[in-house]
Image (cartoon, rainbow, N blue to C red; front, side):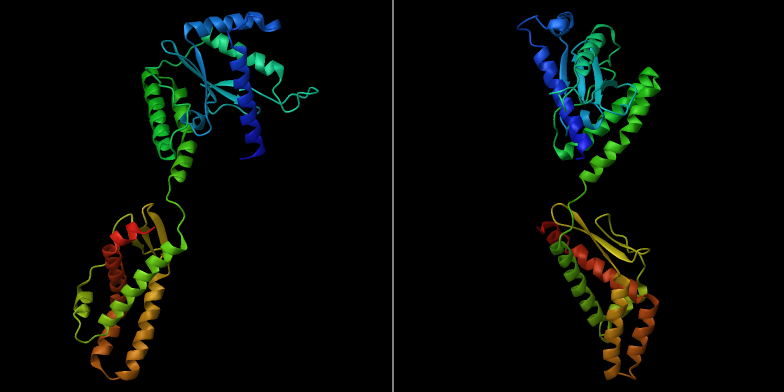
Length: 325
């Protein structure tokens, strides 16, 4: 988190603490703010409540720092910022800045605290709030990381529906602004980083499958040659297991978290293993007709056949790979 973000969080928290302290009903004596306190108390008795958004809440990711809400009259979205503007013009700006007064460095300015309470009073008294039925407020409390994406998508859907029902394009603009937060949530939901153990497990299966393929391919009695001659090239299996022709890479999901192992250079590895095996066979069977036929077949479609064999082996090992820690 940047220093600016930390400062923003601190000022926002201080602003909320000031509201909580100021809104206490024990006494009506608030000095020069007594009249403002009286108006705020009236709204609180009517049912208005202020909620502060936690850092990992859907409301916070939607650009909302505070929600000023009433169970029947609706709700308002507020964003506390030292600089910049809210992500949507439907969100009310709460300016905050550091005080430069002696003894108050790093804290909120008194004028900002007063302006915040005045804004709440004005909104609760005469502001145009969001109707709960038209646009439900997002949660201000933390949600599990895996649920945040669904909450944001649901709020984006609510915004688009509100745009249609009210014909107010500002809801649509807010929905578009949510794309960045949704993209971040998608990235957070991606499987954990691949470990060396994950990669080694996949490489081990590939090495074994390639060895078995070459042994059978150069066996004069093996039916593999005939199967290769009939083989149709279709190397995509699923999102969890596929060979990408253009990238010469294989992708396979490993472990309960479905970490995606990506290994490149598979075709090159197949060709190298073939050349090494062919040279060894040629030294022993230099004039064998079946060996010459093997070379012709491999040059035509041997790489594809070998990769098919590797994918088959990985397919058969999916249960084992899925259980890998």
